[in-house]
Length: 122
Image (cartoon, rainbow, N blue to C red):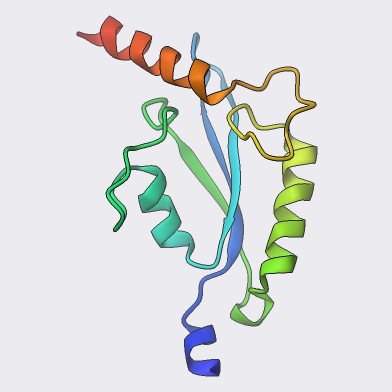
């Protein structure tokens, strides 16, 4: 039991990206995971489940990680820290726990913005 738990790399992370329009940076996404390195690959579309990249990944994401020791990798603790970080940092692309954020972008609008950016590049 402890051998598997020690392999975990738990923590929460903040992704800061460029704004959709302009060069300034903003808080884009807050998340948590017990395998931070694998979660980053999932967001970038390079994970083991082969899901497409998140719509904000073309905005030059910078990752800021709060790595926790393996023995603090309890799900209830990670969820609490993620909830507090979302409420405090007000990331643009989070949906859960972020409905009160007036700057929040719903997923449908994020996809439309990504298509517009892709069309402008080509």
